[in-house]
Amino acid sequence: MGWSKKISAPFELLLVWVSKASLRRFFLSIFIPLVIIYGLTASWQLPVNGDALTNAITAWHIGNKGTVYLTGYGHLTEKPFHGPFGYYVSTPKGTVSQYPPGAALLAVPVYMLAHGRLHEAVLLNPSRPEIEAVAVSLPPLWPATVTAVLATAAAIAFLGLVFRGQSQPREAWIAAWVVGLGTSAWSVASDALWQHGPAMFWIALGLLLSSRKNYWASGLALGGAVLTRPHTAFVCACLGIACGVSNRSIRPVISIGVGSALGLLFLLVYNALIFSEVSISGGYGDSFQNRLVSFDFLFLFLNILGGLLDPRVGFLIWSPFLILLLPGLPVAWKNSGPWARGAAVGGLIYLLLQYKMNRYLPEFIPYRYPLEALVASAPLWFAAYLYHIKNSNNRIKRIFIYLLASGVVLHFVAALAG
Image (cartoon, rainbow, N blue to C red):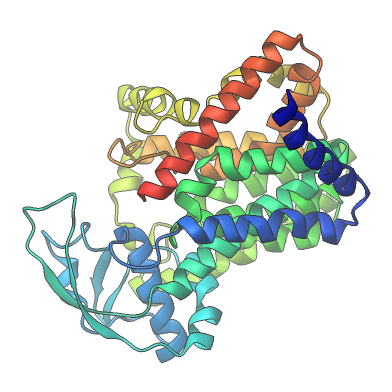
């Protein structure tokens, strides 16, 4: 009991300070500690996943050579190196990343300031020991990791401000920390320069601006998400339509639509210039499009099931507190603003499209594909807590805390292992 009081007393004082803090201090009280925590567990050197490595190499070339073409990486476009050591494709003008440019562009300013040079390195893939080592020229990785850490921490802090508009500051502050440490925002998005951290950043900023009816700025922010993960366009569309219908005004639809469409337009122009084709898929080729229009609904069902419940990556397994929030979603829906409902619907469509186009990735620990959808629907999940868990009996509250603690521990272990 004595230890409990010693621990709870400073925490209560902190919550008192939080409840009186200005918006700026509230944001920083989430952002700065998360930057430190994420930084301590992030990947600052090899080995780094091929997705993040590809974005880092692209960001260096844009920032230091002013080009997206990657000279000297052509051998990585062929099997067996394509995939285990990054995702590059050949074009008539040279080798490029297969990914949309959004994540790399966010890291460009850091690479420009760093003035780092390429150095020779030998890549090994620990999960694929049968593949021989390959020599490549690599930029320093720390600017890419800095970008991932800052973008993810800022995304969580923006969500904290969103939650603050829904409830009391202390509840919003705690909820932000739940998202920051109890999801793979910690163990995946902040670990390296995946697409997820930057996409989460833009979605969270777009949500905050929409909740304050700053629709033009929200659209521009969401356009950044589209440039990073193109199918987040459904979050933009559903959010804009929901706000327009609720307000009986075309203004939110046009404002969010035009702003986010700039990101889509940039992507289409980029793909036309680089891949000689006006398309959204760009360097991914036709495989995802073919799966999207196929009638293999068994594949979709198994993907959804695995994404939810696979012990290796299921987000209800790795963030189990969400299970207790599920029954509260209907009442949360009734008590949430149109921007929160629209973003949640868009997030759901985004995730279903992701599972329709791609496997749920059982080889990765923990989950990563649901991250953008979880950020888009975060205000609805928070409302489920406010209108369901908060007013429930002590037994349900204790179970919720135990599940939350287990999620934090799981992601802590995964962050250290990563």
